[in-house]
Length: 66
Image (tube, rainbow, N blue to C red; front, top):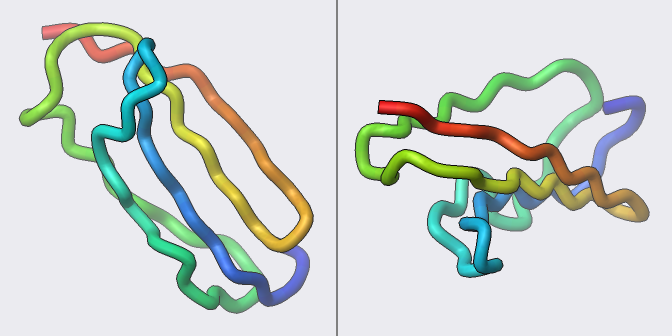
């Protein structure tokens, strides 16, 4: 991130249902941050990770295989 911001990082299934909240509207400093998503409790399939910051929304598709 290029500046401090409130951040949410949420995982949704392919139906749009929220399945995991990795970061919940937390104030984060600028810089590089890491988050670990364990797929052990998720079924195989397609999921969407949505990163929301002050003014930006980024969505990435991920596939979990077992």
